[in-house]
Length: 193
Length: 193
DNA sequence: AAATTCAGTTGATGTAGGTCAACTTTATTT
DNA sequence: AAATAAAGTTGACCTACATCAACTGAATTT
Image (cartoon, rainbow over all chains, first blue to last red; front, side):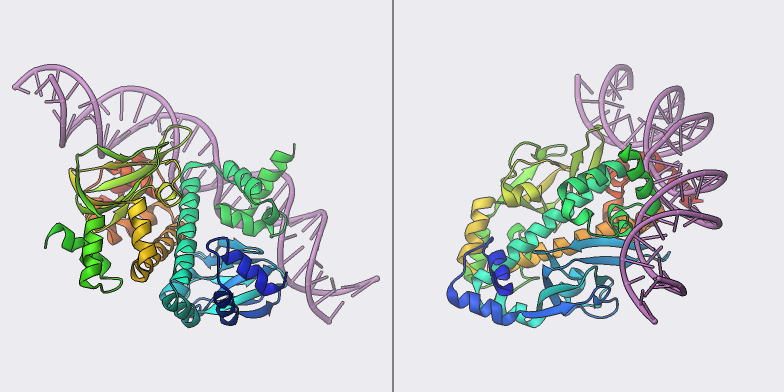
């Protein structure tokens, strides 16, 4: 499967596409390579793109007033990533999006995405469904954070996303789950026994 | 302004509508009255509707394994409410949606909404924008929960939603913010001084 | 208007998870 | 391969918020 075919396959999980639609999609996305530790979104700059990960891993994080990093999202193959608040409203970002590995992504810029959506009902539908799914996903995360203990959240995560667990630095996972690296370290050693 | 005009005005914040579109919208929504303490969504039943609040107040909550209620969302005039995870995927709900006051809502059922969206690009756009906004909203909540203390979250909430603060029972607010009623009570008495 | 239920307060005490600092291990760079 | 930087571990101690229980006040219900 070529790089672009992966993207098409992803969209066709939502709705099937005509030959012409596929071509229009392909021409709207650019393939780029991102080195480990490179930033693709930074605070105060508008996130101009939405990224589809073909290979590699990313994380989105914010830095609190106290200077702590809090991971908001991970993305590996077949996931989207950006600072959506910035991208959707085309306002300055508040987050960092950084590559955790040498990666390859397909990027679309805001204007091209708007054109896709406004010119074609099917594309509009796909992006609507994507947005609905992320709403549902985020809501599930809010619920987990409100109702589960740190240990439960960790167990749930490793069960749901084993492929992410072993791939990202421990401190990023701890900060995603809402506690400290030290605590995760202790938790893991406790669970090992 | 009639009840239906409020709904139209709400949609026109996103995109302006033709006379015909307005009529189609109106005929897709039903006006219903909901008494205080009445449930409009309950766990294990599929949420068949999405609700637009014309008058009154609602809250969505889940009950954890330990039996504690956790408020997921509030809705007052001009807000939407449902168990979206249930509504969007038409799967059994995990949440309760209950009226906090005698209320009036406009409801649309899942099938009618699908028809609106599939038959008209503009409607699709509106629902896409609505979904994007809720994603952004939820993400902001996740960030607040990860980065701010209980006191900061409370202060932020009362500043952002003063109209909700004085209208809902204190324990629902505490459970929305992620702590106990007792703690909120102490917090308030501390802040009063 | 009395009775009952529901919501909010306050005190005493407990604990999940945090902080800080020193150390070890693993990656990355030269 | 050595030097350096980044990530993870462990111990001692701490604190924000929870729990439980008893009480007060406000709203509903009869």
